[in-house]
Image (cartoon, rainbow, N blue to C red; front, side):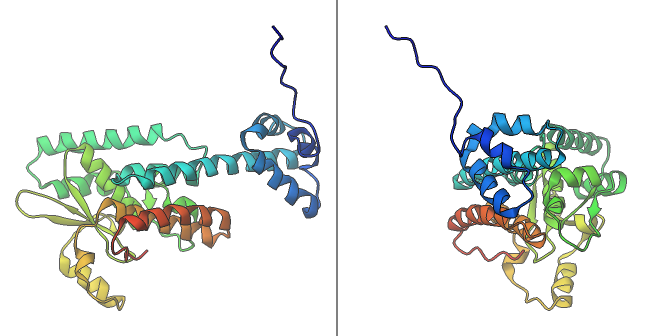
Length: 293
């Protein structure tokens, strides 16, 4: 019987080895096509790119790492699309997948453990105290842990990341609300999000009376009149849907659009296009996807 044929390294002008030799070329006319071919090769280029990340040439190292990250981000985008195609979505699961799109090298496990630990702490406090759940949740996440709104004016992709929010304790309204919701779920509390334009808030369901928390506003406990005042101050019409708990899929779509806006602000059009694919799938699940960013 004939022996199995040996696998020989890919050769030719578009082989990874030949392309890597040109990757550090200073001319955009050379670098652009080389980068596109390496991206097109997909996993076949991984071994050569990984070797290049250990090169003594700083330009080659940087460009090889950027292309590897691009491959990983495309993989993360495909996972997002597959998740978006499912009929039901968890907001925490969606944001975790978006986090890995924002930072393809992110290890999500420490952040999941952090959310679980915070939820366990809230559960313990609820057992020891007679305070309402919303008050306990706010006092712990803002009063002790210091989670509040970011004061950065220029949007950056990292602002849309729950992992970064956990690290810095500063975040966008929707990310902070999702964090409150995830911690509450671990503590066996029920929290819904109210999709107020530009300023999502969280509603904690309680035995006596549901309570609204503004995680972006220092975890303040607010009433519906405060939301109406915000709408009036920003010349926004009062719409019932903004005071009605939003489905997770709608919040997933909204956060996808938020993340795309952050990438657009820094000129990352490739990431915007990938997220547009996710948003299109999510919008197909919603009969009236009119939720503002």
